[in-house]
Length: 388
Image (cartoon, rainbow, N blue to C red):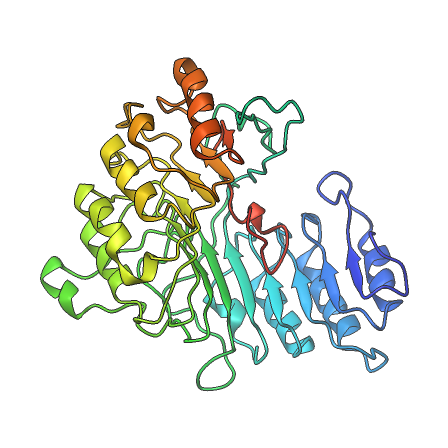
């Protein structure tokens, strides 16, 4: 464990490689009455039958501090009943990560969660974490990607899927818990948006088969109208959302909303949407923009987007955008704050790498070109997430 008995946190190290005896884990948690953060991520051998014992340990009268952070990502044997027990035993939870547990459904959340602010669930792809190469050469940089095989593939998912649906809702106050971060990744039954509280700042529905109403009813559809505090929106891989529905979704944000992060990678955005993107009130303060795999993105559209966000853009991902022709550098605006640009499998890499290097030196001296897609949220290895 990465802690000592006086520490407020307990995290299993290398649990994916070597599973410790459950009795040792229970004893270690019991010996830490001031424990605030418990991370058992990757403990795939943790049996559902032992969840009740751990819940009892966490609810013991001898505990002087209520647990606030519980991370169970990849504890694949746990069940809905297991998660409910933890919620009942830890009423002070502010952060709950139950991603990559395939058996879970809405029933897991039928327990009070009055203080929960961060909730992560669903199925994640293997993490993509940039590792800086010290051999920096004129703004071009390679990255190593965590997870074997990522140099050749983008979408190798963890086996198994969860069963969260649009009816997902926590028990507790009428308005629900004060959620600020809601992450539901690759939930195959999530075809429409669940209830979204007005406290949300971070919303990630990557890989979910979301869809809007019929085109004739889009005018009345306002799915994000309550999210006035929203700063991060990820719809990566939501291919079932039409470009018109995606535009309507962004336009439904309140006038005071200012997104900082937008991920529309691998979606059905079209030329009209990309032209409209810089003019939307909610996108005018975008600093992190992912458009990887957008087949409609051309040099002209990219130039217009960069021009609109030139004073604030820090991270941009245009990997796999095959419509780019690489002829925009001569008329591209300067990008003083740009730190990363991902160009994997585009015309800006390979044979055009030298020209890309020269352009970055001139237009964005601090920028690093990455030859793999960017994971803005660093696979949620930290909660709340830190941006790349």
